[in-house]
Image 1 (cartoon, helix red, strand yellow):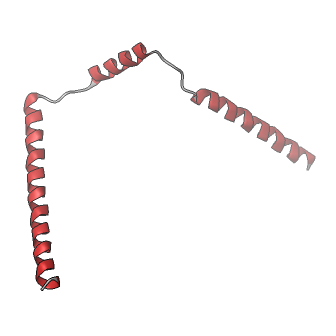
Image 2 (tube, rainbow, N blue to C red):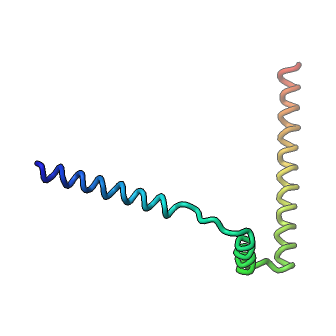
Image 3 (cartoon, rainbow, N blue to C red):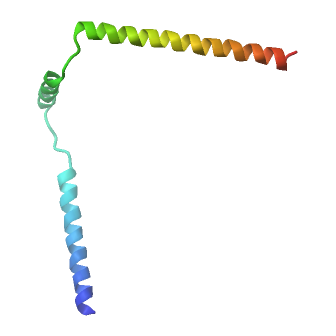
Length: 90
Protein backbone atom coordinates (compact mmCIF):
# COMPACT_ATOMS: atom_id res chain seq x y z
CA UNK A 1 0.00 0.00 0.00
CA UNK A 2 2.86 2.38 0.76
CA UNK A 3 4.30 1.71 -2.67
CA UNK A 4 1.03 2.70 -4.35
CA UNK A 5 0.89 5.92 -2.35
CA UNK A 6 4.48 6.73 -3.25
CA UNK A 7 3.79 6.18 -6.93
CA UNK A 8 0.76 8.44 -6.63
CA UNK A 9 2.85 11.20 -5.05
CA UNK A 10 5.55 10.85 -7.69
CA UNK A 11 2.96 10.95 -10.42
CA UNK A 12 1.36 14.03 -8.90
CA UNK A 13 4.74 15.75 -8.68
CA UNK A 14 5.48 14.82 -12.29
CA UNK A 15 2.11 16.22 -13.42
CA UNK A 16 2.77 19.51 -11.60
CA UNK A 17 6.13 19.81 -13.36
CA UNK A 18 4.49 19.14 -16.71
CA UNK A 19 1.89 21.84 -16.04
CA UNK A 20 4.63 24.35 -15.20
CA UNK A 21 6.48 23.52 -18.40
CA UNK A 22 3.28 23.81 -20.43
CA UNK A 23 2.56 27.25 -18.95
CA UNK A 24 6.07 28.43 -19.81
CA UNK A 25 5.69 27.08 -23.33
CA UNK A 26 2.32 28.77 -23.84
CA UNK A 27 3.52 32.23 -22.85
CA UNK A 28 3.61 34.46 -25.88
CA UNK A 29 6.96 35.78 -26.89
CA UNK A 30 7.02 39.47 -27.60
CA UNK A 31 8.07 40.44 -31.06
CA UNK A 32 8.83 43.79 -32.53
CA UNK A 33 6.20 45.53 -34.68
CA UNK A 34 8.59 45.37 -37.63
CA UNK A 35 8.73 41.57 -37.32
CA UNK A 36 4.94 41.43 -37.12
CA UNK A 37 4.49 43.39 -40.35
CA UNK A 38 7.18 41.35 -42.05
CA UNK A 39 5.29 38.17 -41.12
CA UNK A 40 2.00 39.69 -42.30
CA UNK A 41 3.55 40.64 -45.64
CA UNK A 42 4.86 37.10 -46.01
CA UNK A 43 1.36 35.72 -45.45
CA UNK A 44 -0.15 38.21 -47.93
CA UNK A 45 2.27 36.97 -50.58
CA UNK A 46 1.03 33.40 -50.04
CA UNK A 47 -2.60 34.32 -50.76
CA UNK A 48 -4.02 33.28 -54.12
CA UNK A 49 -5.94 36.35 -55.19
CA UNK A 50 -8.94 36.05 -57.55
CA UNK A 51 -8.70 37.35 -61.09
CA UNK A 52 -10.55 40.51 -62.04
CA UNK A 53 -13.12 38.43 -63.95
CA UNK A 54 -13.76 36.14 -60.96
CA UNK A 55 -14.05 39.15 -58.68
CA UNK A 56 -16.73 40.77 -60.84
CA UNK A 57 -18.64 37.48 -61.20
CA UNK A 58 -18.78 36.85 -57.46
CA UNK A 59 -19.60 40.49 -56.71
CA UNK A 60 -22.45 40.39 -59.23
CA UNK A 61 -23.76 37.14 -57.73
CA UNK A 62 -23.73 38.63 -54.21
CA UNK A 63 -25.56 41.78 -55.33
CA UNK A 64 -28.21 39.73 -57.17
CA UNK A 65 -28.70 37.50 -54.12
CA UNK A 66 -29.10 40.54 -51.86
CA UNK A 67 -31.69 42.08 -54.19
CA UNK A 68 -33.67 38.82 -54.39
CA UNK A 69 -33.54 38.37 -50.63
CA UNK A 70 -34.62 41.99 -50.05
CA UNK A 71 -37.61 41.53 -52.38
CA UNK A 72 -38.63 38.34 -50.56
CA UNK A 73 -38.38 39.99 -47.14
CA UNK A 74 -40.24 43.07 -48.41
CA UNK A 75 -43.07 40.94 -49.81
CA UNK A 76 -43.33 38.99 -46.57
CA UNK A 77 -43.43 42.24 -44.59
CA UNK A 78 -46.14 43.65 -46.83
CA UNK A 79 -48.13 40.39 -46.65
CA UNK A 80 -47.96 40.09 -42.88
CA UNK A 81 -48.77 43.78 -42.51
CA UNK A 82 -51.85 43.36 -44.69
CA UNK A 83 -52.96 40.30 -42.71
CA UNK A 84 -52.46 42.17 -39.45
CA UNK A 85 -54.54 45.12 -40.61
CA UNK A 86 -57.24 42.92 -42.13
CA UNK A 87 -57.82 40.55 -39.22
CA UNK A 88 -56.72 42.40 -36.11
CA UNK A 89 -57.64 46.00 -36.82
CA UNK A 90 -61.01 45.47 -38.51
